[in-house]
Amino acid sequence: MTEDWIDVAAQADLPANDVIAVTAGAREIALYSIDGEVFATDNICTHGHARLCDGFLEGNEIECPLHQGRFDVRTGKAMCAPLTEDVRSFPVKVVDARVFVQVD
Ligand code: FES
Image (cartoon, rainbow, N blue to C red):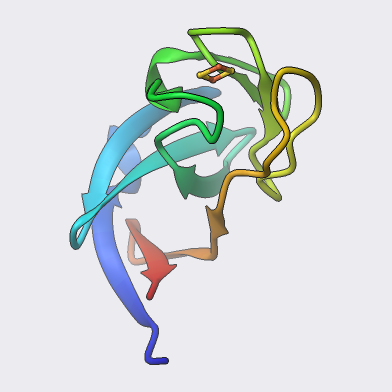
């Protein structure tokens, strides 16, 4: 399977210690800026149809706005109930102040 790096945002457009939604091809991605590092996961929660970009970022965890499930945004790992499934995370790189996400 071929994987491509997709330019999704200017680093300057990422609010510090917050989350925004971007698109990478047909996929909607949540992009997190945490202490100068950037992470990416699918934007839709694995429990229901809620957008993680509307949740609350606290430390390394995003809290889903619908039922308050939390994922570690660095790995996508589901951290608590009601989540039973990790959210997919994606590799990120920053080149010349642009943020690239690697998706299928
Ligand atoms: Fe995200 Fe239920 S939809 S925790």
